[in-house]
Length: 376
Image (cartoon, rainbow, N blue to C red; front, side, top):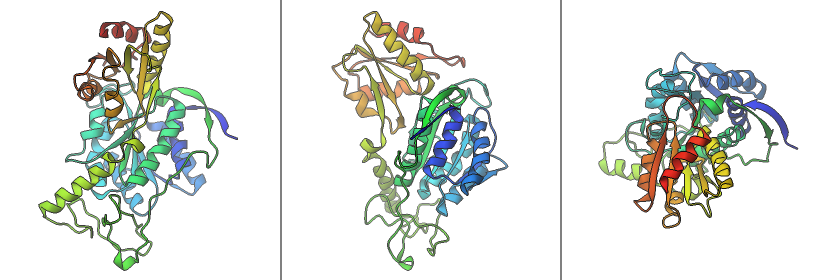
C-alpha cells in the first residue's frame, strides 16, 4: 500500500530520485532548489549512496557525469544562474551520451535576477543552452506528485536513451506542499541502462550496429574504453572525419526523434469540445486548469493542454487540433518562449496568442479567462 505524506515539491524530487535508484548527488546550494540538496544529504547515506557539496555548479555537473560513467545513477539540482554554469559539462554529457538528471527550479533572471520569485524563462536554455546540435529531453511537472513521478521518468528516459534529462520546475511548485501518495517499490517502472554482452576486449562504446542506442559498460567492471568530448569513432577515440561527425550527430538526434511517442507525454483536459485551448506548463498549468472549470460554468468552452515533456516539443499534439479549435492561448511566465513554439507547431492553421508575465507574480485564472476571450 502506498504511503501518504504531506511534502514539499523539492522534497518530492529527492524522493523520486531515490525511488528511481539514484545513489549519487553532487550540487551547490542555490535558491530556490536548495531543499533538494538538503534532502539528498540526509537520505542518500541511508540508501548506501553518497552526497557531496562541490565548490561550484561547474564541478557538480562534472561530478555527476563521472559518477554515471561508473554506473551509478546520478543527479544534481540548481536554478537559473547555476544552470548557466553547468552548460559546458552538460554539452560534454550530450556528446559522450552519458545518462544523468539535472533539475532546474526556475527563478527570475537574467543573472541573479529575482532569487525568490518564480519564472519560466529557462525553457529555451534547456533546449539550446549547450552549444552545438544535440538532442534534448526536458520534463515539466506541475504538482508535487508529478515532481515525484516525473523525476522517476526522467531517470528512466536518461538511462534508456543514454542522454542527460532536465527536470524543469519553478519556485512555486518547488516550495508548495501537497498530500502525496508515495508509491510502493515496483508500482512505478524503473529502467536501468542496457549493458554490453560482448566480451570486454571486443567492446566499442559507440557501436550502434544493434541500434541507435549503444549498450553502455561501466568503468571499473573490466571494460577499458575511451571517452572524449571530441567527435569520436565507435571506439570512443577522436576523429576529424566530417562524415563520422555527420553520421553520429544524426544518430544521436534520431534516437530521440524516432521515439516521440515514448518520450513525449501530454495531459489534455476537457479539450474534446473546446473552442479555445490553453497551453501551459508548471505552476501556470494549475491556474489554467482552474480557469477551464470556471469558464465552462458560464458556457465558455476552454480546454487545457499540459505538456509533461516540453522537449522534444509536443508538435504532434498541437498540430492535431488544426480545424477543430478557434485558437490556443499560451500562458507563461516569460516573454513568449513557448508561444513561439506553439505558433511554429500550429503552422498557421489557427490563432495563437500569448499571455505573458515577467513580474515574478503568478498568472491567475481570471487573467487567463479574460485573455482567452480575445482569442475567439
